[in-house]
Image (cartoon, rainbow, N blue to C red; front, top):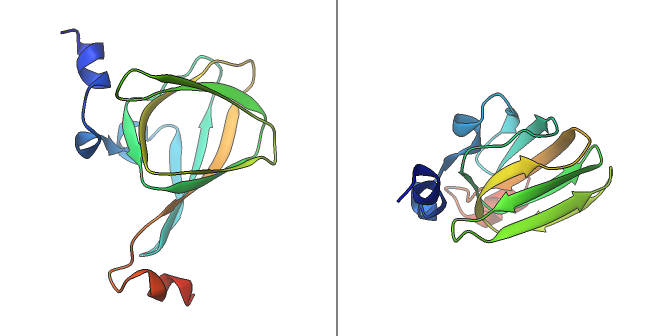
Length: 123
């Protein structure tokens, strides 16, 4: 099996954190026990390593087009306009900017509070 095929088949439990795999593209803006807010930037043709996000909300600061390759090999094509907002369940993927413009987004990842979700809801 090729290294690429092995990477695509890697179970979600083994996928790494995006800030570890692609620290040149992801910057942590805020992190606490409830959420982590990431800023993500890339250029046309850029590709990430396989990584995992818990459930998240994405807010597009620019218009862009990209593909997401899931661990089972399925490829999703996404287009965003500046101002678009998207919800996603937890996901492991490889992202690639396949458009003509840079990607710039804010991603808010949800966490489970050690005290339970009600503690985060109180904030």
